[in-house]
Image (cartoon, rainbow, N blue to C red):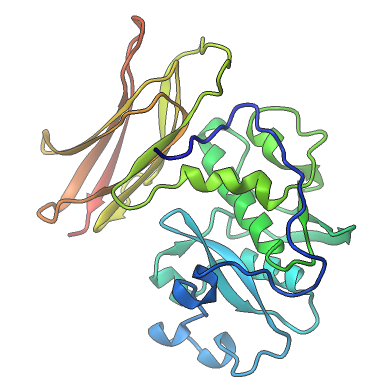
Length: 315
């Protein structure tokens, strides 16, 4: 069974990571060439002289982008006038390269976000950005992914152990994302955000957040919100689905409907409360408009909640 993602009452773990050197942290097989991208600009005709320096003058760093909503490290050359953590952060804000976009890399950080401030105090990086995903129930997953990208990118060099994130000078972190007070947001380490990866599903799988044991019973109006894909999105081989369910908890039913006929379905058979995700292979015979319907069945006499999104199967 997949590990359960606890979004309510997040406990911030402030344990340090790494040693005290200034080398780049070992990011595992993905970062060592198995899946990492090294600005493969030549694949799409981009200027390789700038994208892939023959001999980087200053070294390299890792930037965490998203591929099918799965965080993955990609390599970047860092200018000699910047430290590896700051250079990596600036590269992250630039977003995926043209070649990486062709390979379906993306970012949860808004494209027009700017770095307003960067400083380091006792191996903690303090960064201030101009734009990040909004703190709202329907954007919770985006906010968590953005925090994951920032913290893992900046701490990829073991010169930095934790990151204090600010948005236009105001604290931005797990407390705010979870709906609590952001006044005393502590710095974030990799350990604090390791749970985020559990919200991401692998091809053909599904999963959801569950309520913390002993959490208060839900008393509001049940709702389902689809975060991805966007309305009208063009889908090819796989439907990457993410959203938020607010309710008393229960399984989710996902239906793919074309011309009023159900062509595929999926059940997330867990007590989903909060984020959910599913990756559903698209039948090869499908083309054209497709309705994605997600239903949270009613429990204890409550009505069902559902959401509908129309996408296009590119074929």
